[in-house]
Image 1: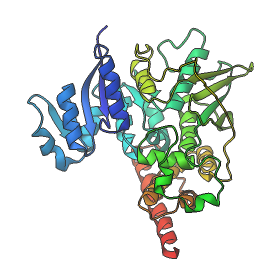
Image 2: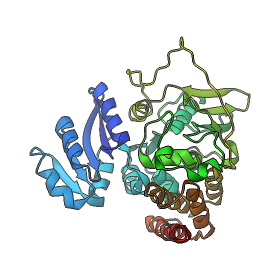
Image 3: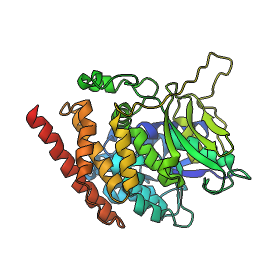
Image 4: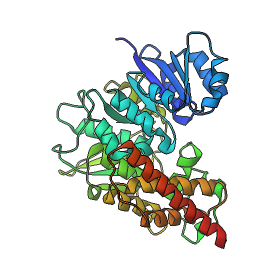
Length: 399
C-alpha cells in the first residue's frame, strides 16, 4: 500500500503538531508533502527540515524570504492566500487546523480539488456553510471531522450503517437514528452561578479541566460556545435537524459523543482525551491506525457521569441554536461576533459575561442577505465584525 500524501495547514498549531506526531508513528502510511503556517517561522522551518515536504507556505507574505532562506533547495515556498489555497489542494488528505474564519479558503480549496478534508476548523464550515456544501459536491471531495465530538459521531454512524462504513461518508437518514448527543466537558465553570462568573478573568477561563487547547477554543469551551458551534457543525456535516441534536455535559471527557437509535440503542465512542486519535482517524479513514492513542484502562477506577447544561448561565449555547435555526447569514454573524468578543475578553477589554452579550447584540442586527458566494460570506463576516466591535466599544465606554 502506497503512502497517503498529507498536507498540514496550520502545522505549527495544536492540531498541526499533533498530526505530525501521528505521521511519525506510522511513516510508511503517511507522507507530508505540504506544510503551512501563518507566522511561526522558526517552528515551520524546523518542521520542514524534519519532514522534507515539497511545499512550504507562510501566510504572511512579508516572511516568505525569511522562510525560503532557511530551507534546502528543491522546497517550493509560497505565501499569502494563494499559497494557503495551494497547500489546501496539494495532497490526498488535507488537515485544516487553521484557527477561526481564516480557515475557509483552505476548506474550499481542498473540497474543490476533490480531496479528503480532515477538518479541525469548525468555523469555516459554520460561517461558510452554503458555499462549503456546494464544494462538497465535487467528485472525490469529502469531509472526515477532526473535532473529537464529530469524529465520535462519524464513528458511531459508521458502526450503525448496514455493511459498515465502506468508502463513503456515513449518513444518518434511513439508518434508524433518533438523535445525536454531543458531549461537553462543561469547561472550567461547570456548576458556577451567573453571579460567580461576573468577576472571572482570563486565567480562570483558560484553566480547562481535561483538554489542552489553544486560547480561543479554550475560552469557547468556558462559555459553551464551542458546543453551540459544534451543534451547527453536526447539522451541516450529518444533515440532522436541530431538534434532533442535544448537548449533554460529561465532565470526564471519555465519552466523546453518542448516537441514539429509534430502538433505544445508544452507540458511543469512548477514549481518554487525546486529539491524536481523531486526527489519525480522519487521516487514515476508512482504515484505522495501529497506534492506540487514548486507550482506556478498563481495570481502573472509571466513573462516567452526565448532566444537562445550565442554559441560564451559558447563554452562548442557545444563541448558537438560534443562529443555526435561522440559517442563511446568521451562523456567519454568530461566528464573527464570537471571535471579536473572545479577542476582546483575552485583551481584558470585555468581561466573560460580556461575550454572550456582544454576540446577542450582534445577532439582533443580522443582515439576512444571500449566502451563495464566497464574497457573500466575506461580506457577512465583515458586517458582523463591525457591529460586534461597536458592541464592545459601547461596553468599554460605560465601564
